[in-house]
Image (tube, rainbow, N blue to C red):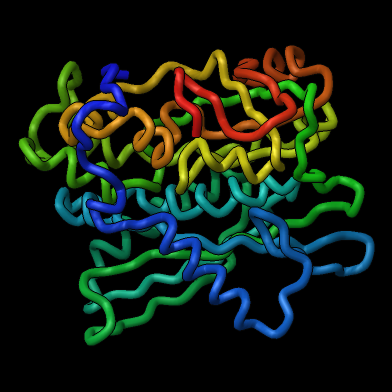
Length: 327
């Protein structure tokens, strides 16, 4: 981190950039409350009892990362992001992803763009080891400006294989590195990064451009599911919108993170260019750790068998403690 203190003059925030997480959560709560019956849900996926197993469903999109792709005329990786954001949510619930359908809405058809998106979806499906089973392309000139890409992942889980979803004091936290900024917080990242730079400018210390670094596709964590099941993980968190506050989905505890993965250069760049506070960065971005699991024992083995590391522990209390911050 750049070491920008939270008691300094306030810099750019996610809300200033156009996304207020509190308002978003309130709108979501209003939507859910208006539905007469919403059953079989977890923090990351919806569940349907189909007999001896659960069918899990997760829906998500790519978000304003698409605007970076548009600026660079490079849509070749956003399909990977679309699949990753969905299958990672299923994995966080203990569900094995098996299939994916996409939804592409455009203001006008573009064969070259559609080809690039399709190539990304195919690459994402291969990485996640799932099937692409169709989708929908809608031409909506009076509704959409440019394009929007979203999709739904379906998965299956034996009834005794779902993660409980709740950590307990005494549990150890294992984390896995992110591949970069992933596919959330781009509204803030874009505004910060382009204040003094163009997407085509060289990224400091890299042979890539600013835009290319922002487009680095989201890591897919489906390979972690079997090891996590084998080590009796209680619950997992996919670190997306809301940043490190996602750990609160694991229950009301104190989450002490004393050895997170190093902060990738892209976050340091965004923070410096936008004069963003340390707290705002950790409330918005993954900051280098994209997935976290809580388990009562065997954490070192789980970390060793995968590419993870023990990053902290669960204690009695509340809040998330990381890098001197209390979230």
